[in-house]
Image (cartoon, rainbow, N blue to C red):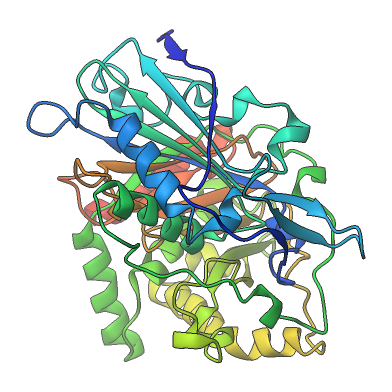
Length: 432
């Protein structure tokens, strides 16, 4: 299906009043190899009570220009420092800084485009702003946005953010600030703080870029599979009965994903084949507690990659409650590993992650705040990650669109040849 999208030329949005100039230091977590990429997503808004405001683009533009006053580093550019070559944010209120913004119109309704559910009926390049820029221009930017209007009155908001400046929580915080100001709030609900120079570690991540990894041929396109809340609750009750401990929805969803994936791909002839579950831990509460207000408002990188590994026969055949327990044990060890790493005596380098078919990466997007972004016409129907990343299997945990409940597995989860078997395994959980 070839749905046309007409884009206007990008415009540069600056702060509505004067801001500070100069270079701002990034933290060692910002400068890590695992942060050297852009993250893309779209927020999908259905028309409410007829249509959104007459000019939603102007509403967002106004919110952006006001939000860029307290969040002025977002209007900066990322360059190596002339002093030591380390990446810094260069801010210049009177220079070429600002956020690139694109307006677009689609020649269909959201329903015609299946509400931008996977597989996309409109290419990601048409829904995101970054295709308008050359690579050397794009990588120095921190945040870009595109609003696309649909004939039904619905809109999508495409976002590309530079992971060097934000992690997911930080990017969600800034996007909500734009929405706060678009709705007319005098200041953002969360006051931003910088303080990147306060975070330093004796051991730095390696500088190898994620983009240098080799693709894993044959991965399926992104799919969305929903696990009903009734299934989540049933497994939680099993865990309480058998393990004597409560568990989280993340543990349940990750365990179902890991178990079903192992069963679908099989042991490839080896019952002791190692499977790896890599997940992103938010470590704000650990490393920001000495900052003002306990670090509330900090929007830089505060993530640490954790890994739990087990052989094929354990992941595929052990009771689901045991898989949940393995993941819980790994989560419980985050604090000790983080401090050992920061102090330079950690045994594992979280920047050296397994890149093989036996590994699946899980990142929980349900708490990033994107599903709460209200520019003035309500919260989004759905949040849709977009990427062309095929080096390993990556799963985002999302909130399903209403009226569905539970948790959504979204990503390129298995090779195409294993896709049907994986779906069968997940559905078996939902009907058991």
